[in-house]
Image (cartoon, rainbow, N blue to C red):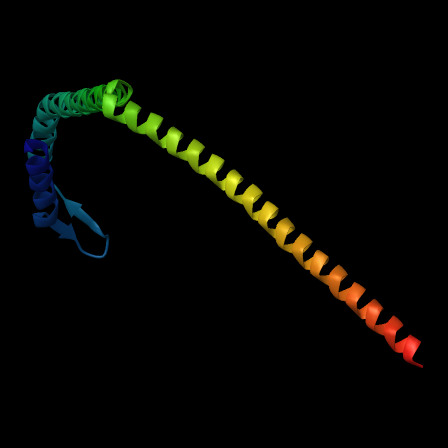
Length: 148
């Protein structure tokens, strides 16, 4: 950037200037310093305009890239949704899954009912056996009482 070079030149002029002892001041060539400042003023507007243009162009490119990325993402989403909605395999798989689930629930219910009926039948048989044993015990006790 030319302005930076001119500023470096201005800095060199100040550094190379004669200093006044004990005053902390320097002697500058007024014409030389004013000439560098004039060149800076001439160059500065062009470089500021160029920097502004670069900034605006960068922003425009970023916005354009973001818009393009958003469009690509939206198109991909729409395409995926269409594929899912229209995919016959997916629909058939969903229907088949629902059938399997329904059959599994029905089978589970039948198994539960069958298990309860079986358990009830076993308990009834045990109850009948216990009644028979109880009756036998009662008969045996009565028989023992009669022997006394």
